Image (cartoon, rainbow, N blue to C red; front, side, top):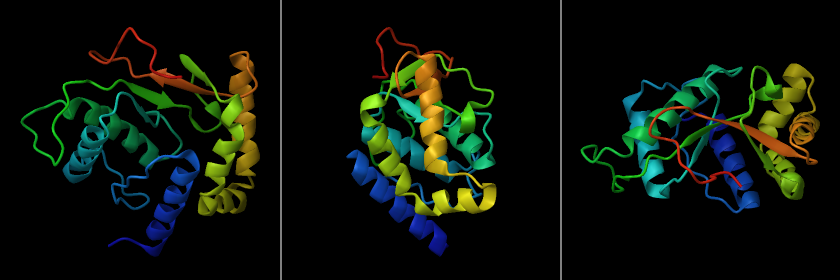
Amino acid sequence: MMTSAFVYRTREAENAARVLGAEAISLDIDDAYVEASDKTARNKLVEVVRYTKADVIITHNPYDYMRDHEQAGALGGDASFIATLPHLITDSRYTSNFPPVFFMDTLAGINFIPTEYVNITDVIEQKLEAVTCHASQVVWMKEHDGIDFLDFVRTCNKYRGLQSNCTYAEGFRQYAAWPRFVTTRLLP
């Protein structure tokens, strides 16, 4: 049974996706219940990889501040491989492509050394507008941690920009596993 908080968070994600010109897709898993070993969740994510024909997957770092994020990262890595298996039947056809996986920055960049940077200077305001759509999280971080999350995001992206010689950037690290390496640049 999905909670009213789940329904509200889903609407927030849909609103943020509209700001970005993206499609919001949910696996229908409530907060604090993401499990990489959950076969149903894994198969749902495999279907998403197949449906979207993902050429790259960006997911949470395996060492993050929250267990749900860590489990989501593991699910992303598993789904990138499992989506290529023809004997696993989902609504969408399997892919022969192994989508490379990139881990996004941790909160405040703690214990994270990027191997790739993406200049987001031209879209920082759009990113902040999308983050603002997640009002429940912005309010919770202010109440729970005393953090102005929009300022926090801007500051972290400014720091990554400083590292990569631009105004604002995001940092990523590629999941180093065969056969996920390609010779073309995948991030903008």
